[in-house]
Image 1 (cartoon, rainbow, N blue to C red):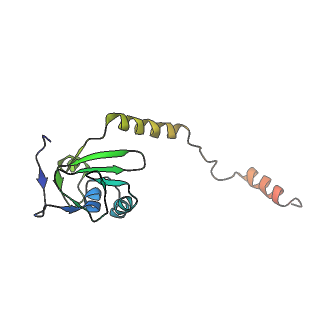
Image 2 (cartoon, rainbow, N blue to C red; image 1 turned 180 degrees about the vertical axis):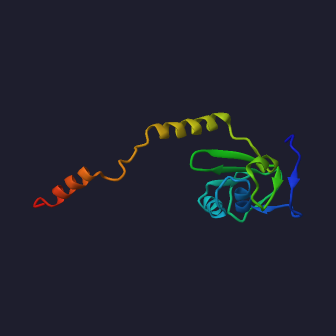
Image 3 (cartoon, rainbow, N blue to C red; image 1 turned 45 degrees about the horizontal axis):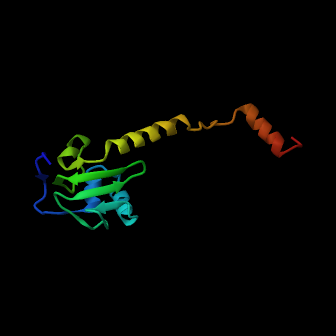
Length: 136
């Protein structure tokens, strides 16, 4: 709350799906709207529709694939901002334990990822043909 309140808009509120997209929480506005419709986003502890109005001082809890983020609205914008400017519009209040857990899950997923064999070699193709057509 020690941050200065920033608003690029003359209005006092912005659509929730636009704000979530603008602060780079979701890659597309459609993804943000879908998350709202799927009850993955809460605005001030209430399940929110994509058209819900976000105001400075609101708390947004958004569930993404890996983590549930808790955000405090510091500024309003409808335009997507660069990553360095995101802190001007939101304060991330996600517990550090949740961030560490998500990071660990992501690292473990990479360790156990199955690498595909890729394109079959000439020998593999011949073996497959023999298997499928014994008269070959």
